[in-house]
Length: 385
Image (tube, rainbow, N blue to C red; front, side, top):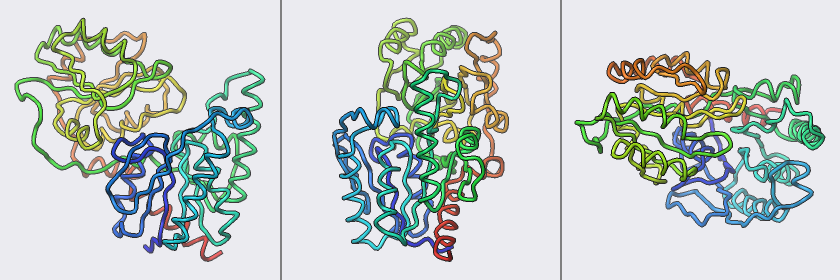
């Protein structure tokens, strides 16, 4: 299928990507003709990537009271203008015909609105890897105003953009805000990719459990799962838990004091190093989000390996439940649940892997190529309108 020239506007890209930046990287790698794919990374961090066709817009975001009232944790219009100016330069110099604006941050979406007004023939797609509205049960006046303004924003995007691609986990939110529209399509998290066997970086005499990603005190905390795994390590002292993580350092350090050599703190590392750790792991560890619908980006990446996964759940009905049921090779540990150390030990000792041909059938909409096809189909449709 013809792809044209595509520009992705996202937040932190390589070498230290955000979860959204990592997803965009997998989509970019799914294109056969990568020379025609460009990335504009919008971040306050001074990071650079040596890959061709990757550009950076470094901008220190300043809070704006007006934007905050409308969009919550958003930034000033100067940030949007800087991102827009650099995007225009890339579009003009490289004959870009399709722009994919990744939410969040909101600046990427607002830049897309300005680009569509400037380049009438440009195909612009809003790509929602995050949920725009997380306060559906709140009765606070502030959140009601936020709901109204975000609904207004989505209707504006629906009028201006050629398409809106949304993670399937957020379908209830977008149906509530937009009702039905032929511009809206739902996709899986584009993180499913076949893993290649690489050299093992861990001690083969140990049972190596790996966690990669961030911790957050308000929604993804490590203390309870590490407390549970401490009991598991008592039964299986050969376990080594490697945390390639950042955030909640106080909780992690407290767990280290209790668990000793069973817990290895590796800190934040480049994505390539994290991938080596995942590839070498015997078991993978996931910590869910204490938010409705929210799904950690690395969970589908873990599924890609086919390896056994220990999954900590704050909610029995969180966004990952159906995916975990399809994956099957998983042991769920529930917050405030009747979790069995004995059952977890049996799971670890009986670990196995699922074959790739099974995984790609079960999670076909999580293949990056699936998202590539959605983008290409939208581009062709916009040319024919």
